[in-house]
Length: 226
Figure 1 (spheres, one colour):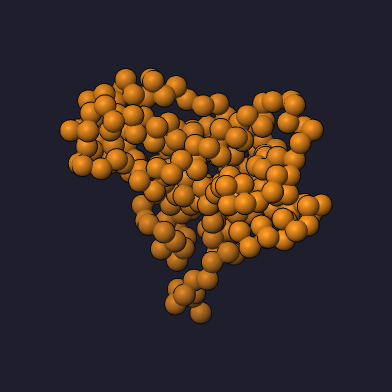
Figure 2 (tube, rainbow, N blue to C red):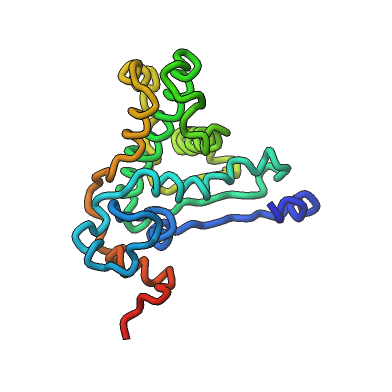
């Protein structure tokens, strides 16, 4: 946000934020399905067997949605063609395509379906819409932008706001989500949202072990062995 004024007064300024996702794994995609936050950093044995094949959807969505908030920059005053967020999936682009298709886009479909069902059947909810953190719509807006940019050849001539070098997936059928959840109540949505893990293909070996990545990026306070 602090760069908006600089871009306004320097129309030729171009800012590119390059996110190497494999290096941001500890911050964006936490694989531990039996602990919250980064508590399990001190318990390598608890992550050895998991080693990245299972990821809690909540962690993946929270982690990557922080970066996707870049979609809000134009509304905050960022001039067009001044800023680009580049999501780099090398050296495991299919892995991140899986995450976007099977976690982020599924979560977005759940948000949209729950919003529509809350409008249609408010008595099935506990007085408030679910997924309140994402009700502002920035996740949906960012994913749509990214998918459109990836598929529209005309976008090559312009400076994108968000782009990726891997396929971000295809939107899911919202109507199908709604029909399958017509009778759901709040506890059903909560149960679905707290699935312990979502199985993905094994992460590329070039990523290294999850526990090593976690230890490299985060301090282990009072947990280091002598």
